[in-house]
Image 1 (cartoon, rainbow, N blue to C red):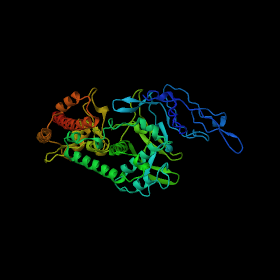
Image 2: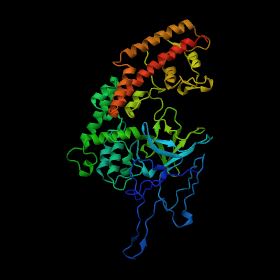
Image 3: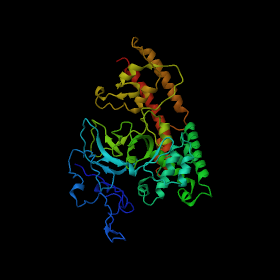
Image 4: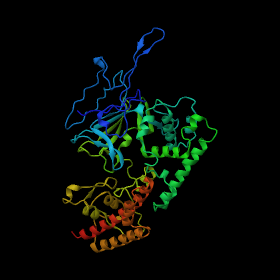
Length: 486
């Protein structure tokens, strides 16, 4: 069985991570603190505080399960692990956290053979999360805001329909200010303002590099909304315990960008209460995005635990990155608005064609071996030739966005299809000509600006990915008309 990572909830000011699995973090991690007895003044009886799960208590009934090394399998989740006298902790199985091309990520530390059931690789207890219900009355899990604290009045003043990120940012800043809160230490793992790609932190120059006026206008409005909220609630007359949470607008804007890019929205059951909640979940927020993820989230209500699970039937090799799908069915502009990144192979990206020309849908799908319903298109690689790797998410997006016609009783006429292809390609070329730079120029700019800010780099990549998508559609139409007779 693989070793498990353990994060203690007690003595957080000194003891943070106690396993060799996480030694790859480039942070100074201290050892376990000493726990000395506390004496009762009346009876002079020594009372020893509860120790964290990094030590074994003397009573066999409290012994945690023994974990054995295994070359091929992960330790299955043990729902009875958390016993009386043990502190709730994060546990990780067969994975490691380390720096990757997109920042911190989660990677497999051993091979995982496919099984019919999903497997747990992480368990995060509710006590370590920051959670706010999505609807009134606002409920916090865990409830760390004391009665009468002015931060609740600020949260309560937000718009219930649109300001979920402002509410969670207020809670995050409040957690940073609490000496005994887990997030005060976990904040060291969060990216700084210079490391964030969120367009909330972008300058006007960065927004102009998007070459997308609609997205730039949307982000300016978002920046104005966040700034006005800070000015309204962090004025000169606010109490010191509120002012110190965000002394300048940059601090609050950074907190909102962290919330937007790392929040997980889930329906959770806590006791008899079922809530749709916005959640900041430590360690799970290090999972990067993929349109073909190998993991998913599952809420285990019986002990209030979030599980990160490997998909059933998924084969994982040592060193593979563990990923989840942040948003399904969204274009690149939505990913930029929320997370600050885009992709050239987004299967949900769209091109708005204005003409009336259409190609035959079934023939296009057959040429590229695309199967499934439109909402579930996928490339059937078993039908493809070895070494044929042209089909990717961009071709799947082309199948969804190209104007098509379909009539099972009428076959396509090659000459008519070629005519439609030419019209669609001409319109794509027209779209590319409207950009002030080409994809080759954008690539050169990125190569010549290794020290560019993260937001500027994200903006240039966004416009580059848009052009690469259009160019991919043009090449796909070329292949389509070549193969239509065969």
